[in-house]
Image: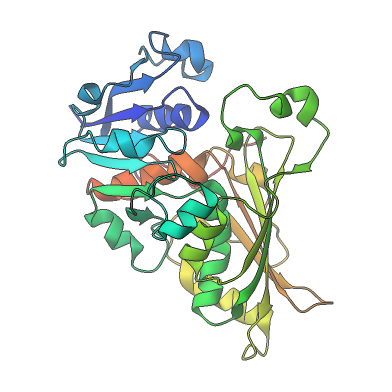
Length: 338
């Protein structure tokens, strides 16, 4: 018998990706997969790609979750905190929702509304010192998908003083799975295919998370819905710090130093640019950096799988650390193609 894990909210896209990763993980045993409207349905009826997983969704009962050593919460924003509060203190929890990401109650109120339920350890191991904090934690708040792509591109540059923290612009395109599995008119194939559309312009909820994780003090973020199932491509631009004589070289040096020993972050060779297709099915983040010949701004492009490094893969990476396992267990930095 391996380490017992459970997934609450397993019928959604992130929940399904968690089930897939757990099924291939050599140390984890799935003891419960809970759902709301899909309770009683076979997992394979909801997730056909998991046809070999002989399991039935059950209702989300804290008693079923409490039998696990670690619980993944893949619930809509605002639903994790109440459920987590019912779990025993000795059950480790990784929350894929936003409930415990933000330390600033005012930022929570501004972008999410409702009661702020407090911050947990932030689940991005690549940030300085964060790997040890995650490994020591019993409660971890996994990162938002856009936040992963933007933070990995930006945080080392601000920390190294290469770019100014008060003039950051992010434009990021995401696949439709990032919007969840609920039936919504604007996500119908006829509405999405052949079209790009911005949404939540000027007020996206990942803004305070990115600022908190990177040290940015002013951030303009425009998310774009792309006609693809999964993947995020983020373009991050920032004004060079006055001390940066060669901003492109300084930025590349900072990213190289930050990620030289990281198993999942790849700074691509000069001239090679990230593409979402190259990261699909993986826990990888691909980066490239340059400067704009006209404005002189530093540009970093970042690609991830929003259900991998942006959700389920990141959660499993954190769980491995919390359980004392090698961080890469059950995960890959290699994508699938074509």
